[in-house]
Amino acid sequence: MTAPTTPAAALSDGWTYAPAPESAAIAAVKDRYLPFVDGTFVEGHGDDAETFNPGTAEVLATVSQSTTADVDTAVAAARRAYEDVWSPMSGAERGRYLFRIARGLAERARELAVLECLDNGKPIRETRDFDVPTAAQHFFYHAGWADKLGHLGLGPAPRPLGVAAQVIPWNFPLLMAAWKIAPALAAGNTVVIKPAETTPLSVLVLAEVMADAGLPPGVVNVVTGAGDVGSALVNHPGVDKVAFTGSTAVGRGIQHSLAGTGRRVTLELGGKGANIVFDDAALDQAVEGIVTGIFFNAGQVCCAGSRLLVQEPVAEELLAKLEARAQTLRVGDPLDKNTDVGAINSPRQKAKIDELVAAGSEDGAHVWRSSCPVPERGWYVSPTILTDVAGSSRVVREEIFGPVLTVETFRTPDEAVAKANNTPYGLSAGVWTEKGSRAMAMAGALKAGVVWDNTFNRFDPTAAFGGFKESGFGREGGPSGMAAYLEEQS
Image 1: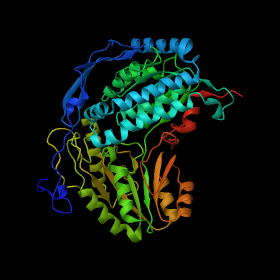
Image 2: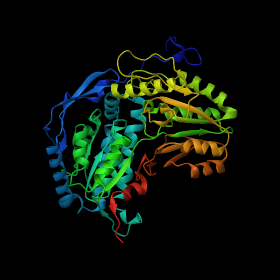
Image 3: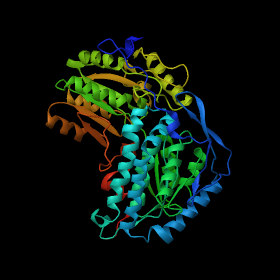
Image 4: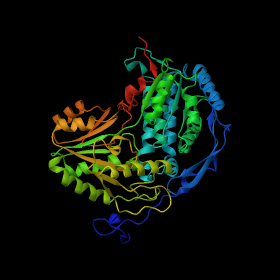
């Protein structure tokens, strides 16, 4: 323990934590990574691209990039595997492969946690305690469904769709891959997946885990690259199902291009979640939930509680508690086990966050920032809270995807519902109240796919997740997520 150097770093007893960095060597980062096609790591036909460590802004590794021709090869491999091996295989046998993958993730958990931290910028505590364990849980859970598809309510023997094209974002690379691959495989489909160009490494190591589990060649293929490769994949005539997680603008384009093709589509897009605190809520508990809702993964979460709505009688008290709590958050090296808020994934994303905060300030909002110092290298944004915001301001309307919270007040439940629903998005919301009847009534009135009661940002593979409006459509997780990869057979 050492003496504190700033108010933000100080604990209540006047001391602070000494650095406790995890070793980057545990990740065993390679100099160069290759796409995974037909059971083999192969050279892509595109130019190499660099992936960066957001915590230091230094090059982490180079990645061989796929091209549209490589996408053709991967889709053809997935089709062969689907027709010859995976679809004819019994559900029990498919489940055994998924169990092996889950165990492989668990065995390499520490390595993957450090790798995700280095490639993405999120704190090691989050990758270690949430991302990697939850990814393994998805494979464990869906392995159990593989031989029970007749109990989903889709007829006695629902059929897989075929080849699934999956495109995932950079904020939860490993978890989003597991989130999508596990149900597709359990249902009998094969997969071609493209990770984000800034965070491909953990998905390529997941491919190693699958190869070690003996997964037949072609069942899962990983192509790398930027948006052009993703577009070639989702629009490929050889795929039967598209699952995309990312921005609303890209999702809208995918829906437009696939309209009339007959292919099944699941879109999980942006969000601008409302976190609603009533005057009877346990305020200290609510503060912790608000912090989790917006500062987890530095706010780079589609379902983040980025809009705080507080009932007027407790607004002043809650805001004081919230600012005091946010002041204790430690911003810094993602590898440090004491870090609460890590790095922003890219300079482009940081610039977007800074632009929207500046726009809010220009619209008359009061901007509060934590005084915790940030590292000189890397891309960081301090925890930020905006009060006196107008509902029409860009900072309230647009998804920020950063550690930035806007605060509004309300008087009645009806006003809270009106303000919460006054958004083009509909992914998540939270309600804080001691009255169960009020929580249930609010959940029914809020236009959000997920509503948390006296908590926020809690996830379970057994529960469906998805949104309404510009947050997309379809569900992932639970029986609903399985149904998205199956054709009903009456």
